[in-house]
Image (cartoon, rainbow, N blue to C red; front, side, top):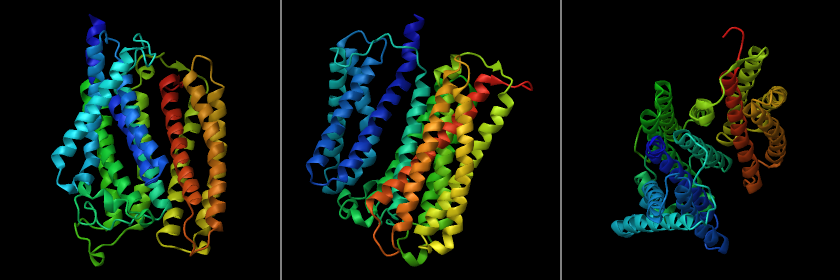
Length: 454
């Protein structure tokens, strides 16, 4: 009886976690497919998008411990298809210029639910090979982790926008060239990839996806987690996401207006810097919330007194705060060099400061990583975080060196090569992962280790 009640209580957050994760992967594939217009690779990636929905439906059925018949398995898959269709309404608006809005929407829901249900049926037939007796998980925590991953992808898309200097490719907000943002025609968005409109508008749509996920997450945490602090944290994250969206809009227009008239707009580089850094803070907040809502945090071993806990916390906090400062300096350099087209002689001191601070951050990351790796065997989480810190900091240094060489080697009037965007965006994205690992180090040290003053 208790297991059945737990299964029913888990059903909504489980379906949301799988549905949002599936749709996130579908959006990622769609993004890649559009970058390959008319090519075989683009067509294959689009087909992969549909396959992902089938796989998502299958996982939804396989992860339901109470799934005892084919009908229930198909229902789990259909739920994923329905969730995906609702989210994908954010994209369908761009295809409605033909006046066939109702048919597009009906087709979206019918095909999504069919593919999801097909995946559920395949899972029931044993196609996924997953045991129904899976370990107990906290599904609201899994959904939180999915939202964090989605936010990370939004950071990546924002880095690509900055890398291509496409932050002002769409001059108005919240509209897009006078269209409602959700109704901006796909044909205009992809007409000329060199214009940067696709990258900027795709980033806006991803931001709306994150906003929808944050609103859903807030409701799930308040209804499914008994801890009031978690519900309040979910509400705070939602407010942060909303604020991040407003910052992104004001970065483009400078003022709250619907006009497209350039004479009435005043794009703000300062807000561009704040927008970029605050996005990383939002991501860090979601990562912390994902740790708090994980099954291990809630039901794992209690914290034990550790002689080095106080020093460890100081080192972890020092790494986290210096990483945030490093992100600020990096964002200032990128925006001054790209938005204002300032010469290297005027931004060189910022770059040197970024490099100098990187050396200190690298040292702290190594110290924290080694300390995490050397924790007792009963704390595998700290060991894994320590290993992640060591890997990420080495990768960050290598990406930073490569990005600096490529950026400084390009002339002021030369077009931006794709390799530069890849390297600078990867450097920024890996910095976000390093920030996430440092957030986890702080969080789990407080969760697992007690200092003598506690």
